Image 1 (cartoon, rainbow, N blue to C red):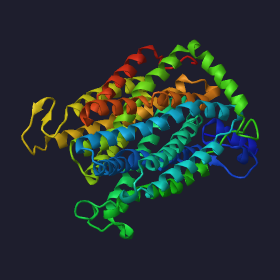
Image 2: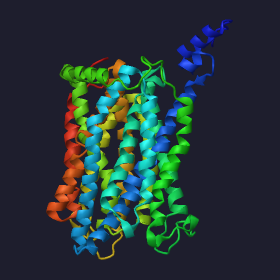
Image 3: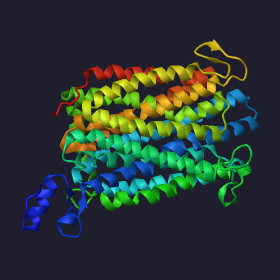
Image 4: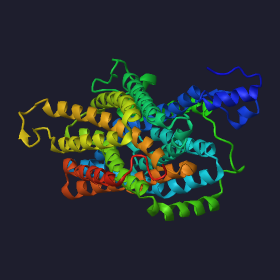
Length: 486
């Protein structure tokens, strides 16, 4: 029970100590109060708002549309069908490689600048703008005037915006609740909420816009606004839809998430930020657990991103699925992800993030093996009758496993980072975390692109993913569950 305090300042101080209120600089001036619950839910809404970039654009709708449209363009130029499919997958991989390199170089620098100034919100606003511009511009990717270069440029611009905005919003996680043991639950619930947002956005896309072979949506309707499937408009609308979704659902985040009092009036002290980053980098060998964790997550998150990025393209090229089929597959994977993120968050709170991470990596290694073995006529090296539904069923099972293990892995990895990082340099730490996720983010796409090019086979092109998961799992041996700063 709270004591009865006459002085309102003392009352609010007591509430804050108990985790019931967060008082920002504006709050201290007496403008308004934000409860811890509202602040947590505001933070959750970033995941809800941003997830469609992964669900709709990267994996299930625009990625396969890019591969399909690029393949058709290459075939029209005289390339064979199988070679064109592999080349389209390679182009997608090279485009993601370039975006990943840009993120890897800038992420820790911007994180360090944010920590040196105490300003994060201006950066969230800036990268939110890039997200919206990049996603919205994908409308101009009609097959008739399709440009591989411009499609990859705008997709990469939005991807950079999404990734950098995530760095800064992730750094708020340790401040959301006074009890560090609650981080796993909050992170898992936030990721589950994000997956749910991805499911809802995908359902909206399939029900109202995306036409199937009949020319109608999954709800049996013609595409909304008279969008013409012949021009790809029913699919290209996914870009503006994703941009609008983000604008709408970021409102709770900006309303309820507040920074602590900034150290400076400007968020752009590049010199100070770079100096402090160099100091941190030089000191990494003195923190072996943090260093090992950054290396481990570098490999297993890269492998997971490879699964997400190329899953829809793989289904389209190897199993001959339609974009509608891939969308339904995406709903299953996202629902599985939402459920197991929530479950994983509770397990994380009880036993910590390390066991969750190890278990998920093992599941994903086995799943990668299953996917690599799949063709239309065989599974795990065993031949199947012509027209057998087994490959389709197996890929649905693989999708559910990727959603479940991948979602829980990402949520617990975010929690683990809060324990490995220096509490005074949390944004910089998440910048380094992004660097570890992006320093080799080009590796999975580049290896997949290279193997696809060399073998001329989409199926063989996926093989590097399993090796990256194994490397990440081995490096966890040197990671302390509570980190070096405990």
